[in-house]
Image (cartoon, rainbow, N blue to C red; front, side, top):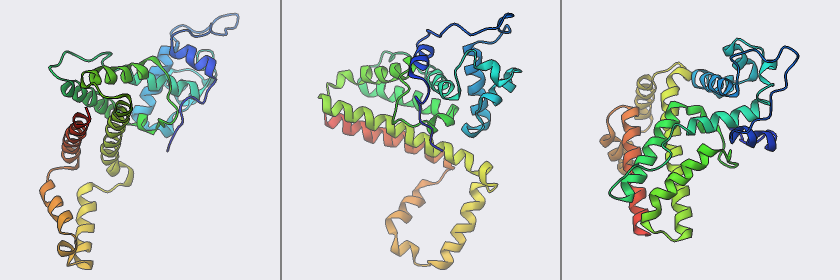
Length: 251
């Protein structure tokens, strides 16, 4: 399920993202106390964290707040604008600027680890397409953070753009794989152990010469070991180091 950001009204979405919401439209009695844009965004994130992107709706958010969906439209125009706000709020969990490090690699590694952890806390964010950015302050701050961390590497503009794209997509891609692995058992009703045991046994019957036909793959699988979670974390750390080696070579 891929969701495109920025589908709502551009004027109102950007005003909400940048902290300049329009005045709520109220009746004679005014809005009920305790409801706000912040509360609605927090409730939306809670729904998506607990039940996934498919469960997100203005009605579900309203129910979590004890209100009707119609009550939310006073503050947020619709689901499209809410999704933009939720996406940017999640990225606001990231540090606003790099901490002091001795070298740029350490700074970039810290940025990548923070983003990776953020994605795993809120895996629904990975379903928001990067084709059209939200253009919120937190999203842009995350990009500025990475550019600041990379600045000491003194990359030429073309290489810098390539490095930024590769790093962001690497973190996003590895986080998506880990998130999928975490959710597979619940979604299918079959544990990883049972899934692999059944297929490994059958594959051994159908392809007894598997190790001879695929010797490098067999060796790689034998060296892996550990749980899918551990293997995912190791792949993230190792892959990031390899990617940074490439960035360093192009500096």
